[in-house]
Length: 265
Image (cartoon, rainbow, N blue to C red; front, top):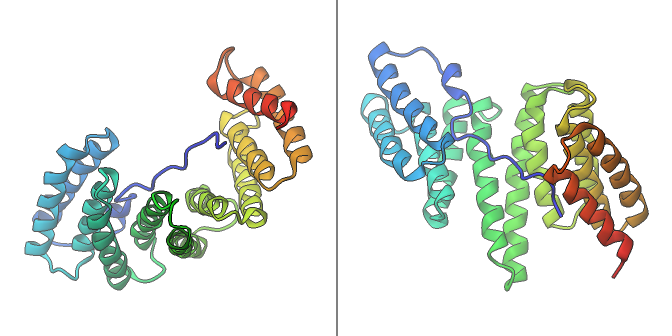
């Protein structure tokens, strides 16, 4: 049981500020549309965001070229919206194209290249989750998700060092896929690294540290090490009761897992 959902990577992910300066009006038109779509996406208004995202793509095609970074980022935005609304086939076509195009336009290890690759990894993971009746295909899709997300992490590590918080999203996404593949030894290592980053950047009593500890414990539990997992979850529960409000849902979830472990099969 996972206690924290993996965050989706934003479809633009602050790439706007990293663009090379261009003609002011062209840049303003594209950026304005992109920002409008991003606001709607952040509000979960995907249907409203799609026509604006398509306008941004049209502006990028007209004002720049289909090989430009602006066009690639807009195509990634449309792919993200298709993914969010369940159109996985269209999302795959657009995100695979966007991933190649962003790397060609901005560089293989550019920060901008992380976003479409992260979306692509999430797409393959969602596709895999729909293939429980076909283990061979499911395994293949999980492998593709792992490859994409390892590439995201590699780019992040080329741009951010040590315990930089920007390393957390790609680590979280990779841990999720590794767990789905039952590669628990490496998943535990990744989540231990996440905990190190959280502790380096947050106050000791921050709830996110509690949730990161709980995720690590549940992965240890999934690996079959019940004793270690139970010990860690009990420690999390003590701190959750001290830090979080009475009746908090996280505390209740941790208690529920502990009860299930204690009761046994």
